[in-house]
Image (cartoon, rainbow, N blue to C red; front, side, top):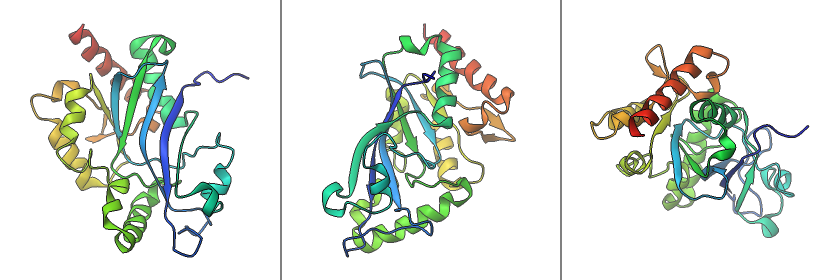
Length: 239
């Protein structure tokens, strides 16, 4: 059966060598990894459709890459190296984002450009309740190896005033986070997004005063409707 949402999600994965022809791994034997430079591609365009700020990459992997299973399990030290730049098809979170754009904008096949994805943590972690633990484990690895690599984990576009450039350059910015994860960083993002110049561009769907993560926008219809209505409001104001 053909995929309804066949847009490609591009990015870069990095794993961390332990110095003995192998890589640092979690208890499941999977490499600790970070993902950055992430975007959903629509058509062939290069312009920014919108930007999205979320928690972390979850368990998303480049399963379309012929050597992905080898890479994530620590193989191919010499052949594959530390990084892979590739693409995969949308996971449930990305599908929810695309569905929201579809409801607000119409046929997404007519879109032409990129939806840029940023995270409070670039740590790849399959379970949301362990996202902060994985983040700290990877941070400890980086601090022992080369502190200049910290930007791979904590994107300077999110952890500095460069985030204001995201707000400035994006027609609108969708924000949603796993509850109580990276709370101080989420608070800082929300504070900066409330600046008068940018607050009219922000799309959030609040649940108990917390910006709900897009993974919840389908299972809780009211959250999805609030997000899409906000996108429509911004687009109508700008048209």
